[in-house]
Image (tube, rainbow, N blue to C red; front, side):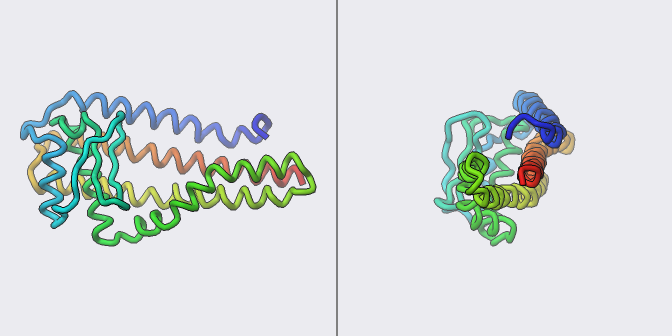
Length: 226
């Protein structure tokens, strides 16, 4: 299942993933060292922007880990890593504004986000359970129909990745607009902010490409098996 000629389908996606990971790591590390002239921390930027959008009830918490920043739509909490929360770098304020972008999406009922949130439980289950059905289908020929179930479950996970793209790009666009409108960064600093956000977005493009490639590969293996 894992090592055959269909592996060639995954090669472009693997290369894109490696490139995206390197890009986001390099850009984040670089601009984490470049302080903004306004000297606002990520937490301050997030708080001001949330209050400005009438979202003052959303708390901002520090979350452990590196690049672990996220907005929790279930509990309505914005969580920032320590380096983003306390940092006043271009990377810090950019990431903080991006997460605020997700909070705004949630508040305004941004359709792609709503769809993503609804299919998340199925996608989360499908991404792991799919392999159980696929393995059983391959190991026991009489249960070959389970391969189709596995592929269907995996397809939902891929759909989740596809829907994630407009959600992330929209949040980044909102972040850039909010940072500029509120004068948190200078014109020259916007270049760095855009590089940080674009690099992060590229990782989602790579994840989608990898998911689609894996799905195509599974279908090829199934059809060849039959």
